[in-house]
Image 1: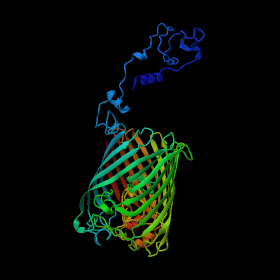
Image 2: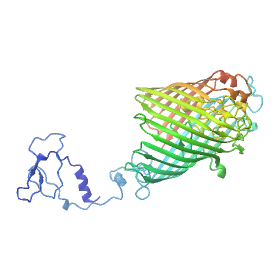
Image 3: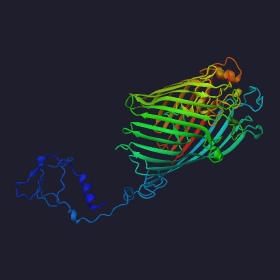
Length: 602
């Protein structure tokens, strides 16, 4: 910083100019004095009163106020030494480097100062996620007879325990001043290390070979992000921009993860307009195979086979503050092109995933286009989130017929809530259409591309958290893990979308209670029905299956001892009280799940 720059900066801190009557015109004196010279009227000093701004004049002592100290002569000031950039000022102010503290101090691991040159920064993120999960739900048995006396022939003891430990590390190197605009360059790498252990009471659940026992230990390394991001241009003085991102990247097609939320490989062009009121994405993604037991991207073991022949094209457009202030709207157009009709894929546990063991047990090629509207925000004191999708397309084989079928399906969801001091009450409605005739040439059951829904209690809900196998259809899940739809896939991670399914109707109520600034309790009660049971009756060869699934009740406690996301402790419990439809399929035994979750983040 030069001396002239310092004087200019100090001038900005000077008081306002004030009334022109406080200045004398000396032009008539002798022509040698400045036009305006400060001569404030004599009055008693008042606290917090701002004096008028002094104009910048050549150095000259002024005799107007004898009690005033003369200003410094700028010609006598020493030359100032410049700093390489503004980030070093933090060190000069006495902030010591503290690599263990992500909030205080001078931490180059958190981008507090450049690591290369003047504008290359580095950010390190670490997250430890520990899960303990006892649970019970209906499971298929390896043979036609369970070893548990009194059990149904096809349904065994569903008691299970799952333990999982994940460590995610995020390395980000980026260039540019990112206070008001995106980085010029960004390189991101996010590996995740996972160890998991499962114990069950029935053989043949964890592995296809029943002789492999009832316990399983496994480990995996997944790559959840590996991309480069280039800032292409700014299109306004408010830093509206266009950028492109290439590589493995997380992406969510809508606000609540109803359609497509994954970390695929892809190319994405995105940006903003009109002072960030408009946001857009244009993207192509190719889905990746997953590790069987962790669900992470499997790029290491599979190598060249890591890419599925499953492409997703997405265009979405966001509008902030429309149609009301504080409410955001979005339009989505997505196309899923799947060419896995000739695939035969077994997972690491040797269960067949493609084709699915349902109906004709043949993989399919399909093209399906989704058109949707999503809204999220508040209308006055009410919080409102809505979503609606229509799916149209064609598949070359039906699930139960050897002929092509047209896809025509619909999905809708809404969640309304309101805050009452420390309590938020909410109501939920969700509908996914079901197929009323699995043997015709129209597939009417709605299925997403890769869902991860945030609604109706999310993963504290039993139905959303747990995969419920459809026993009579072989290794086919009625609903998938971390999914709400009854899609009848082999699994959410490996299976193809299936538009011949029974659909779902959900009506729910719940609330969040902020008991203290760091402790929140949540309760949810959802009643579920099948939209249509024709597909289930065909798959199970069982007539007159009831529509009502039952009452899903859950409660959760979330504690953040530091009032941040750095330490999060969560404990939840959920149970499904069977309705007639669930009892027709699995019996009256109540399934449940308990989740203990501990998260540390740096």
